[in-house]
Image 1 (cartoon, rainbow, N blue to C red):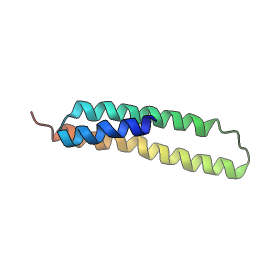
Image 2 (image 1 turned 180 degrees about the vertical axis):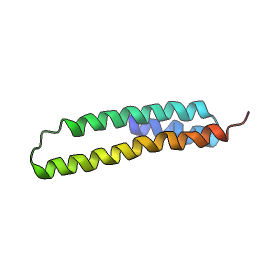
Image 3 (image 1 turned 90 degrees about the vertical axis):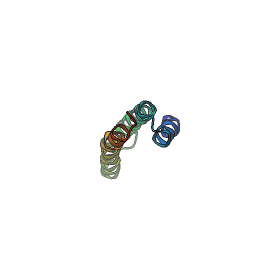
Length: 81
């Protein structure tokens, strides 16, 4: 739910050139990534295949987490002064 609710203000804030709105949506996206990290970490499956899938998923979550501040930066650089 946080992912969907976070994307709306990010897109709207980008189109309206409101960096504070982009920031608030980004915060929701980071909350969702934390929830997903916890879900992957405490998965009930066991075995080598589950560990490999979990590490792949965590790697993707890290990439997404890094991409959020990278995407927020242009919103602040191009905001009207």
